[in-house]
Image (cartoon, rainbow, N blue to C red):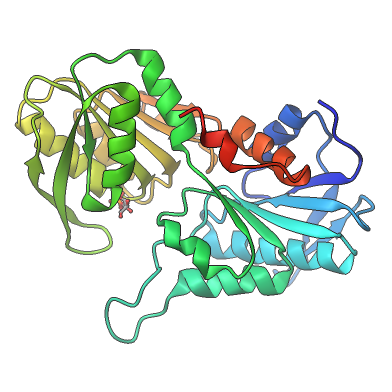
Length: 317
Ligand code: R5P
């Protein structure tokens, strides 16, 4: 693939394997940068390549430890801006704080907006992200956002499984549109679980609209964090007579007890992507599969660099 020397890709420390796979897809070397910590705990970054006038991309998921990865991204952006990069794109495969996107009670922040402001102020000219939890988050940035969907990778995998008697289940109302696209693409029926969130870590799956008895179920979501949502919904569909249960989610956050809950729930396969590194996960849970978003990100970066359409990427889904 022909890409000129004008394109530079750098990696923060959150997901170097993904950044390197993106570079492999694009057949270019990863940009050199030293990320160091001073004895007092502060971080500093030195970019080793000449970036003056170059089109630069920094790959950094703001996953756990969220604040550390976020600050590192901000420092990286500032560093590239001061080194006279001509355009800087923050490539954020997983955007932490995305779910803090509204003030639904008094005296709480809208941290997703705060983080978007910080990324822009630090020097990003564009953002490339995957499944930002809600599409309207794009509007939190006053710079262009290219928003990719993990669905592009996940749905192809599920199609390859040729699951018969399929019902696609949305584990909550928010994911209904995505679930209906999966159902159309995979040729299945659609059902929805009515969920009530009791707290950050507790949810209750209350009722199902749609038929799951005797059906193989695919449940799709953007994030598995505590796994309360998918485990609650999986328990309910099993109770109502579902056969096999597959779960597909873009971001495997797997906070706190998530893996224990998933291991205890009757689920045939959990499929996530590598927007967050999952190197240690298979040791803790055997029925998990990790798909890579590297080719999708690489293709999007190539198109952004060449000023080609990114939305055309989705035309074959
Ligand atoms: C909710 O709106 C999201 O789509 C996910 O269902 C939710 O964030 C998952 O969180 P948890 O795994 O903690 O239930």
